[in-house]
Every structure is written in structure tokens, then in C-alpha cells.
Amino acid sequence: MNTYLSSAQLKDLAKERLSGHYGFLIGTSLVVGLITYALTSLLTLFVAANTLYGFLLGQGIRFCLSVFVGIFNAGLALIYLKFACGASASFSDIFYGFSNRFDTALVISLMFNALSLLPSLAYILANAGIYTGKPILILLSLPLLAVMLCIYVPLWLCLSQCFYLMLDFPDKSPNELISLSFRIMRGHRGRLFYIRLSFLPLIFLGLLSIIGTLWISPYIQMTMAVFYFDIMKPAQKN
Image (cartoon, rainbow, N blue to C red; front, side, top):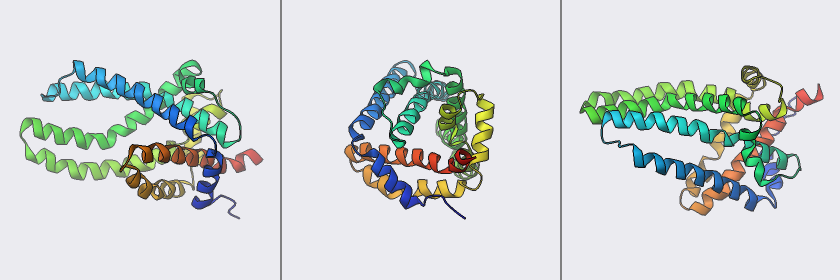
């Protein structure tokens, strides 16, 4: 018997858990966003992207920057899990990944960013075509993007629970967390894919205003947190 919550039920539960916390969650997102913006702005001062070499160098530095910023996701996951189960969170939780299990958070962030390189290969190929004046490379970037997305999406779905699992199982190594994420996502990949797609209309509406985007992000993240609790229910019973 299927005892898992539907997409609509997860979203309703997420709205309930968000009550009274929107200001705090928007604030944490803004802090992480400002840190990312500041670091990215520094990057543009030192790297010129008007040549293929400069472009590739910039992409490499951006990758390292994304890995560093990705460590904040451990703290954000902790905050959302706390609110999802009715506990309180503090602003200092944002930096959890830097002060607790930094090596594990770094490996998981590196893994997600390395995975994101797959669709980025099409972007790099297209830019190589622009800088070298070879239109064929731009044309090849389109089928490459399609292939890379077919690899990226299933892998991302399988690995999507790693930061949550890191918080629940502090004694497990990164490899064990990755393996566990694959295991608990069996039978749930299509479900999570549908839930993520269902937010697209809201995301498009949110793009019309910054305020809308700030409201949607906590809604999505909280839905992901309650989704994690939902798929872990059988494990908790055992």
C-alpha cells in the first residue's frame, strides 16, 4: 500500500511548515546570494573573457567558486529540516558545512558541481565555436546538450538527498552517503522529477519580479525537505 504523500500534499505541508519563517528563510537566501555575488564580482575583475583562454580560465575559477559556495547548501538543508520537523533554527546554521564535517560537505558540493558540468559542456562548446569562428561547434552544442541532460537529470535525482543524509547520518563517509541516496531514491526518481517540474509555472511567474523569486525559493526548498522526510518514513519505522 502506497503511504507516500502526493505532490499536492507535500506542497500543502511545506506551506504549513513555512508559516512564520518566510522572513528568516528569505534572509538566509539573500546572505548566501550576496556572498556569491561578491565573490563572482571579484572574479570578473581579474579574469578577462574576451579570448578562448580567458573564457576557459574563467570557467575553471567559477567551478571552484561554485564548489565553495555549494558548501552553504549543507547549512540551508539543516535549516529547512529543522523547520520541517517543527524545531527552531538560528542564523549561524548557514555556516554548518564550514564548521561541521567540512570535508564531507566539500566532497558532496564537488560532486554536484562536477555533475553540473555535463550540461555546461554544451555551453563551453558553443562558446568555443564563437571564439574560434567555427559555426559547426555551435550546431553540435545542441545535440550535446540533449545528451548531457539525459545523463545529468537521472544522476541528479539519485544524488539529490546527499546533504540531508549527511545531517541525519554524521558517521557515514561521502561514498556511503552517495550510495544511500541512490538506494532511498529507488522508486522515487519519477516522483521527484514530477514535483520539480510542477514548480516551473511558479518559477516563470517569479522571474517577473525579484520578490516573487524570493518567495518561491523557500517554498521549493521546504517541499524538498518534507519530501525527504516522506521517503525516509519506511526507514524510520524499521
